[in-house]
View 1 (cartoon, rainbow, N blue to C red):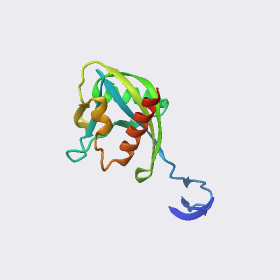
View 2 (tube, one colour):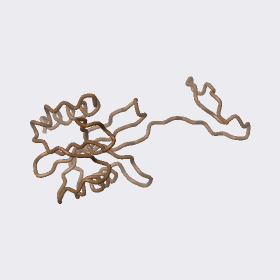
View 3 (tube, rainbow, N blue to C red):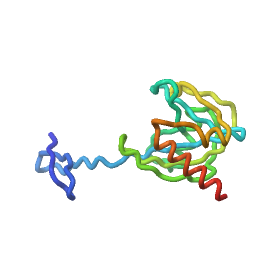
View 4 (cartoon, rainbow, N blue to C red):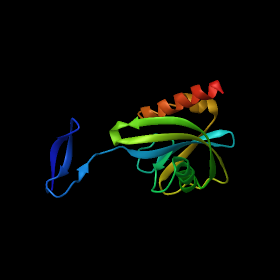
Length: 155
């Protein structure tokens, strides 16, 4: 059984058994996000669980024993059927609503697109279309693309 106790100035759930030392720290979960460049254009995707019209980057959970870069490469392969490599790190973003930490990468991908069951559809956008695409209500995707665009302008 768990009870709420103040630990380090924060209410946390902990085990009620005096011999148990379990504390539910509720740390953020690491997630990778890939902005995929394919044939000089960019892929965005709609998750199969999202309503029509909502698109974002290719995302997935970091698995045990993976680096974030390996996870991003795996997710592009699993969800799009493409072979990818990391071009550059875009940044990290706190997604408080889902208690996640997004680690974002720009990826170069080759091959033939074969979307898996996790995706309902994809869009392939030019550089300018991506920069001006309305990702609302996904404000975090808008922030990632804004940072990517500004960083790319410096290169």
